[in-house]
Length: 198
Image 1 (spheres, one colour):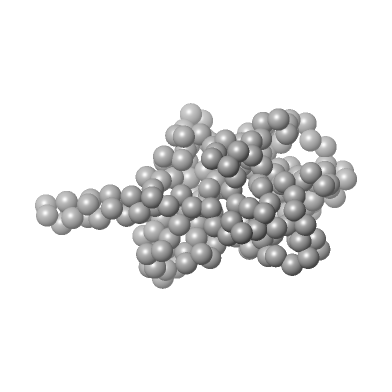
Image 2 (cartoon, rainbow, N blue to C red):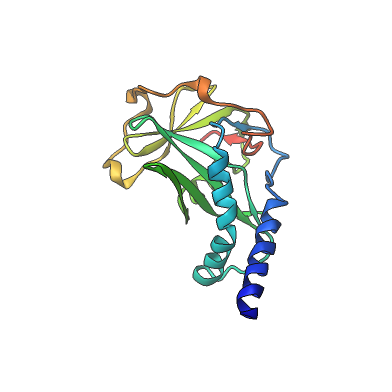
């Protein structure tokens, strides 16, 4: 019984460690990711599951460092299904190591810790020959595109499920609305980052 109570107290303390630091990392760079406002229900679910994710990192990836920080979430709008998923970056020692993806199934939110988009996000945020832009993430035909204020669409992630991506010029958005995105720093700014031109 003491062991169960001790485990519960440890999980509660671990959870508060994350609650105290919903940090936006690398704020010295300046680009805003435009996003839909994440539902409070989803944010609370992700925060509740953080000790579980931390344990998964320790077991599966041998990462047991205590300096783990969850970045602010940003939305990925699926234009085909007219629905939104949210991506929460997961940092260890200021390095992006995983993402927590929040998605809706029927009437409830589900989450998944994975390496999805980690390599692409690292590349996106590498500062070299960079310009400043507002960007949003849009999914179309299983692929993910960047929508920016400088150019309509740029391919960001070529999914194996799409069996070949459409060139950005051929992508037709049916449901996406820029008006649904917010940029206020207290709800939606994931990180101030530089976007690099290839």
